[in-house]
Length: 372
Image (cartoon, rainbow, N blue to C red; front, top):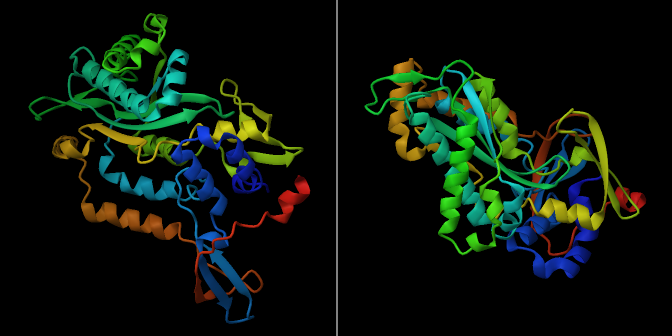
């Protein structure tokens, strides 16, 4: 199987030589990390089987959040850590999409636009939810930023999980949302647009934005997603998914990458073939700025207002102890820990030595050489 790391190892140097001056530090860092992931460059450990004397090298992973190999086991641990946020009420998924006319500005000023996208969408939802015609109380929100479509185009949007109800201002009662209805999406769309416009007016970027964008309809979706456990299970892949997984890359031939994706409307399996330069460009535009937090908590889910969450849990009769939550998180970590077994006889392998990182670049795998 061809991986993203192998593509970067073979083509990365040439890509950086041609476009390096245009790349952000976060993009350069992601490329380097993915290229070195689980290679001698990062060091590792040597194991040996006591039964048949088979040796095995286990190299360190890069832990970069954009690396397909390093994110595949993180979901279970995150889900366990969210146990304290589970409430016995229906949940909703809200999705806010940045309009086409703002995407080029967002691409050039990612940290600012992504932050404003979060702030405007969360504030608009919280404001409408306070209206007694809808929820009539303070809501909780867990949001995650995603920037890609399945075929790797740039499409910034935020998904939120929201419990179906809110806490009264005095903290003494829980107001349930109506069945399969949280807030009116058309009103939410207009309020979201107005709040983002007002925020951008305070920046130097406002003059670069076409005026017609403030007149068009913006896209906001809201759908019920079941109970709390189902809702967080639904959201978790959005948090740890990267722009493309290794299993979606089918082949590399004649300097072209072919990968598979599902059509967003019909769910049909399709393939796309891109020149390797375009493929790398599309991937790198989804690398987030250094230090930018793609998961955010609002309302009574925010760390500063967790006392309000305790009140919600008390009113709903949902009590989870800290020890239970920590136990589940620990169990999830143990469940995803890889145990080294001998590939020859199946027995457990023993640690022999620690391998220091090397400065040389990882070798190009022979499988990719053949495909190229």
